[in-house]
Length: 305
Ligand code: PMP
Image 1 (cartoon, rainbow, N blue to C red):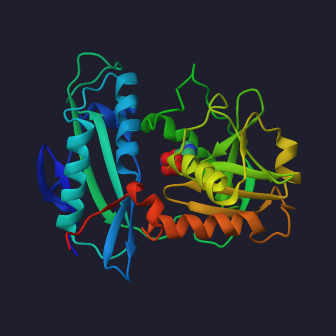
Image 2 (spheres, protein in one colour):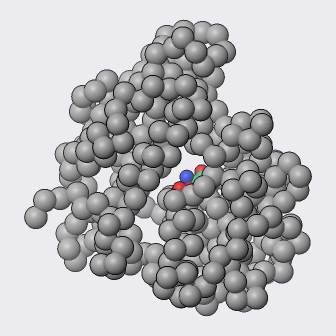
């Protein structure tokens, strides 16, 4: 099935969307991306894009930071993306990658006096963390704080920190690395937020712990409260709490809700999928496929019936 991109304000085959070697963003990481999922519901023969508007709102905020003039409104981006995915015609789980970037053919480290552009493409993409329960380590790489590179935006240049973490973890035999903040509190995984279950309450690092304010994180906080009556406390989390939590899981658009089996060779809970984690995971997967009517406002159907 051919994929398409929206590139230079047109829909073109993905294979023909190319940028030049002098593009500013390629050299200095001066771009912002999003990761959005479309989830295939085979019974309904429908593809649902999850929380599309929220992803573009986050991109828009990041653009202010990087002084990128997004050439489209959030509503336009929403429509362009639905049109793009419809044109691709996928009947499986997909991943949508928007990129707002400094597009000038220009050298020199800066954010000002440069042209900006926006592109988006969609590709089929199944599981990201391809295991039932992940083995994690605490990374030797610290998460930069907001005075180094603001981690609240998906800045491409920032992701070298995540790539260092992921590769270190995998080369040491783990599935994912968990980064600490510069002052030693738990921050997040290389592509996921982290939750712990401690004494029946969910605990997750707060906005000021150098995290990306994940859309899946927000979704899970809502599901836990509204469907299971479980409150989430957002607060600094000590490293020691990671090893002694009753349950632990990671959340992210790519990773969905992935249970954590062990951290630094210490088993978490029973070492499998914890009871609350399992319940949340089921709710989450039903919801993103448009199976829970109450949450349909978060799911954009792509195909007209
Ligand atoms: N933290 C980082 C560093 C990420 O890259 C991601 C993936 N976007 C997340 C958290 C999870 O965010 P979301 O749930 O919005 O995908």
